[in-house]
Length: 204
Image 1 (cartoon, rainbow, N blue to C red):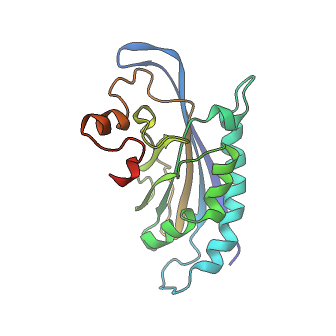
Image 2 (image 1 turned 180 degrees about the vertical axis):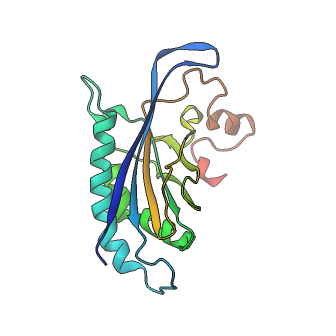
């Protein structure tokens, strides 16, 4: 089955005041969603790999280009403008969570975005199931530093007519920076205070 995209949806917000205080510069969060036909809807399929390998690169390339265009600002290319990033998928009610997971948890999809923004961190994610207008939550984190709490963010929106029962919504999200008035410190501060090895936080 060939990839069938019903529509693409852009989401963007620009925050000027956060927490009753003006931001030093506008804080932007944005996302691109592709509403696609679920090739496995309504039946159990043992091997998902043919569609994963066929759909992943096409969606990855298309959606990465689109979110880079949204992020681009005067004097700054989109890849440079994106500091935090993430991904999500919502499968319709005739599908499995595995279907949502399969299409975003593949290097054939995610590496397009990761390489375009020059990232070192993995793409944070959610995979959920729901009806049309289901909440879409895209968790973000700093593209190079997974311990940078200022960039622990969540983009929230919905699409009134998606996903349909036989559809999947695939999403890439990004932000121009962390929370404007971040003041809770980074993960490394806690590690040091608790006596853990700050140079090896993954061991905790």
